[in-house]
Image (cartoon, rainbow, N blue to C red):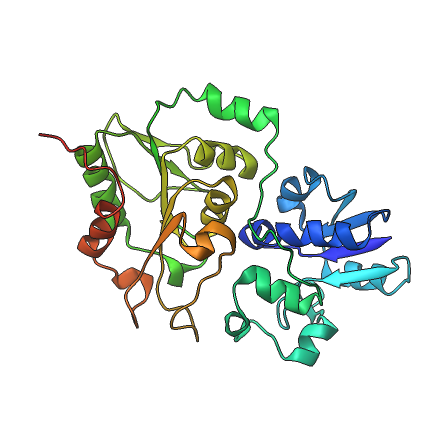
Length: 300
């Protein structure tokens, strides 16, 4: 048996999907078990390269299981200081990450997320580094049932980490600008909304979709506009063109978390200004970047 450990966050789990294919290539006949937090299990249980999902509730639980010897090989796709149990008040460190001194403070110095996780997992990068999302018919049917028009744009306006965010008042102005300029419907996704937009062409789907249902909605969009957060990784995986608002993050002045077509820039525009956090991006800077790519149909 083979274990793969990447328990959170859901953008990270999407980003490392190519490594599930690499593990399967290395162990074609093995029973592969992926350790993940229960809230994110849907991302893994549909992956055809994984045989079983272990919904982990505690890092101590995982430590006991991994040290039992039940697995022939363990791939820990975790940094140092990356796994903490608030109940046990304990960190569980990946020895490879410890030996290479890769932690939450320096990991982007080693490449994008896929490259970093391959490094701490002691895995080779697969030839195909484009993440995939394994949407099922139920997810596509859910998206179809929403009755969204053709030609909509998806926005994601709040991350799970405040330093990555852009002010709500800017998002409100951007949504109104998109609706006016492109005659389009704007669909917001995510856990919750902090926007105040009153327009029939604005659709608030926050809190109404599962992760993979969100992926199906993004797949049907013409474009995605969002933050460096989980839904941007979904957009990369379903190959919807993305505009990603980014800024400095902790010790990282500039970084690119994406592999595949978002990483190469083939299917993505990263919007940032050197030395500034995302919150300080101007509305004009964002709209200018969008105008450079989006079709030019405007309201007369």
